[in-house]
Length: 286
Ligand code: HPA
Image (cartoon, rainbow, N blue to C red; front, side):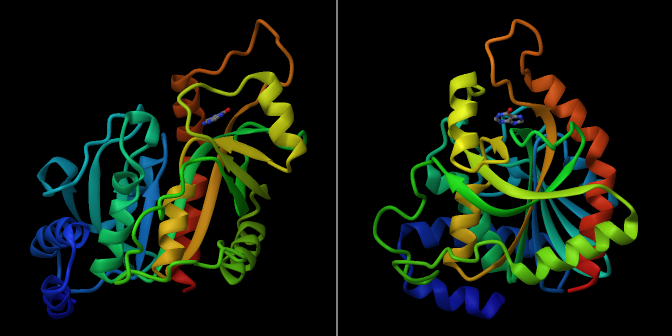
């Protein structure tokens, strides 16, 4: 990968320069083995990082060109090591549009991971449940998404990464979904499957918005993930996504049961071990 990184340097635009600088720095810090899987850990789900063996931890603040994660429940470390017997890189904390970052920065780490050599991207998030069958603490395999963010591919196409008009018919890999369902059954854990809708935030949804999104087919609502998945598909990564249902979305203007960020992180933390084990087994199966 080091060699091909240098080839990229010869014909890169500024975006490639920034991504190349981050990737080169990370390459200097990590072991020789190319990572197979990149993992993005959402709010309260950073615990998975503690299960990575032979871990090398690189704080975002040390990586040239890397933004800093300011969101609640996001640690801000890049972790290289082994999970499920495979070499992985995990992001303990991600970047959101609501923090003020442009979509190019929100999605930049995915392109850095692509340059490091990953072939798969596993994404996770905390989400509110709109499907009446969902309970707080459920894991939901993302089977499709609705993205209300500005599309991160707007602008001159990044030719080195992928095509102008990427297909999104199977954004979430069907084979990984089938394997994950099988693994969840073996583990004896409750797992849902549904559509994740992402809006820019940082406000939680009004009850009218919740009803509107539910009518549009959303099972879970959040404020992240879809921009990263779009960029991952653009550069040909296979994607697996999982939401942890941390709260139920209000469909009426009740005065109790307000959403708040701390509750979300607490509920995600309680589900993180189950998600970690499912990810570990799924990565082992690749
Ligand atoms: N809405 C949007 N994002 C979220 C929610 C929610 O209810 N819960 C956790 N992240």
